[in-house]
Length: 266
Image (cartoon, rainbow, N blue to C red; front, side):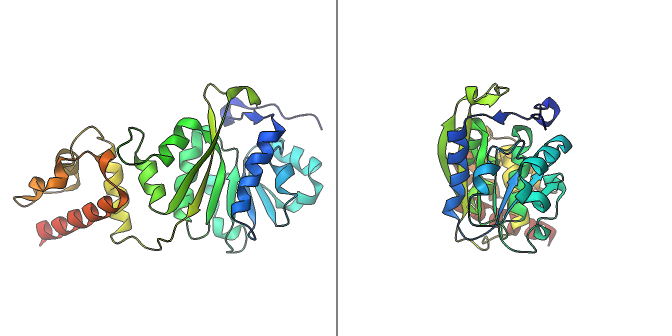
């Protein structure tokens, strides 16, 4: 079967450098002994190295032409190539409820959605590795006080330790993307539960970063149905911008907001 032509509507950029492909595949070795789910294998440039590892491998691919190519070229994976949209999958069904490593050369236009889904299944996914747009990788790995620190940084780092592993240049892809890429690894930390409402935490982080240049005393106003009690906005933390808060401070702020909401509704 002839090669698959990259499809612009699927954001496909096929990696052509085999050394880099092997380096990406080897990032899963930090999480041994559990199965691997690869997202968007394309023509199998990573898959060929993943299947050499002594564990179960499955690959999910939305492009029917790529699925046909993979079935022909990776006969040992015949029943483990899933022609599906990862974002719509019930991940607990992939390995019958067992934990697995997530990896891939992720489609850049949906990489953030992929990682939000990973967070929904964080207890199933102790490790996630792979290649994404460099700008997104920097955002995920950013620390407080950094201009790129934002929603993805906080929500992912609340549950995962993030490693920025290496940068990948544009010229090793077909077709070359307009941006540099990067390989990262995210490994579940020891946090099993946040010391606050996780739903409110997520809502608060998204709310304040949507007005990231504003102080918290301004951006938090839209979270309250009525005016908070006197003194609430005078607290020291309210003069900060969201990019300067650590995850611990976001947890504390979530509890402050929840207590104030309860007082307003009392």
